[in-house]
Image 1 (cartoon, one colour):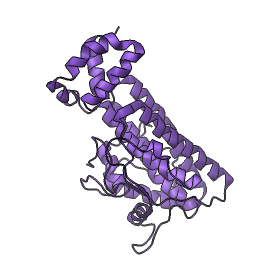
Image 2 (cartoon, helix red, strand yellow):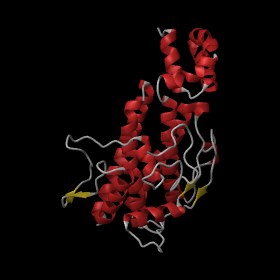
Image 3 (tube, rainbow, N blue to C red):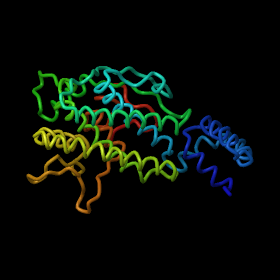
Image 4 (cartoon, rainbow, N blue to C red):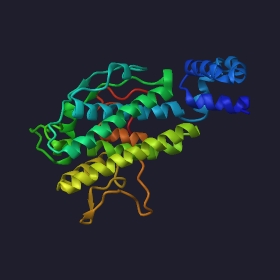
Length: 308
C-alpha cells in the first residue's frame, strides 16, 4: 500500500535525525510495517541521510517541538494558577537543556466561574503537552528554562501597564491573571495558524488543527471575560506591545473602533498567523533577532529557536 519512497519521505519529515528514524522504524515494525521498514533501515543510516530533512525543508518533528515549547509555558502558567504547582517531572524531560521554572503560585480566585475557566484551560494545556510528547516520542524536547516571575513584569512595562520601578504579579489577583493569560492565548492561536502550512504529514496537521481550535476557544473566553470586567484598555495595550515586538498588522485588541472585538480577524474573517520567528519575538520580549530572553532565559529547545 505504501511505497518505499513515500515512507522514506514521511520518516524524513517526522524525525529530526537518523536515531529518530531508527526508533520510528522499530515501532513501525511492531505495528506491521516491518517489511517496508526493514528495507529502508540500511538506506536511512547512510551518510547522505543526514541531509534528508534539509532536502524537504523543516521537519514536522521540528515544528511540533516548537509547539511543545509553547505548550510547556502555557501549562506551567495555568497549572500554577489553579493548583499552586507546575507540571509533573515526568512530563518535562527530553532533548536539550531541561530547565527550572522561576515563579508561579496559586491565584486567589474570587469568582467561581473564572476559577472553573482556569481549571479547564489548565487541563487542556496539560493534555497538549502530554499529547505532543507522545506524538514525538524520543524526539520530544525537554521543558526549557522558563521565567514567569520577571517576564510578566517586563511585558507589563512594555505595554505601559506599570512604571519601570514597579512589579507586575500575574498571580496576585484575577485581573492580573486574565491579562497574563491574554498574552499567551492570542499568540498560541496565531502560532498554530502560521505553522499549519509548514506541516506535511496529514495526521500531524489534523492534530495541530485540533489544538489550534482549542486555543482559539481559550482565547475567545479570555477576551470575553476581559471585556466584561472592563479591562479592554489594558488588553489593548498588551496587543499594541505584541504588535511592536513582531511587526505591525497581525494583532487586535479586545475592542476595535470602540466595539467589542472578541474574534480578531482580517478583512476576510480569517484568523491571523505568525511565523515561528515572530512568535519568538513576543515570548523573548524583543523585536530583534535573538536566541533567548523574556519567558525563555536560555531560549527554547529544538531546531526552531531564533526570533526574526
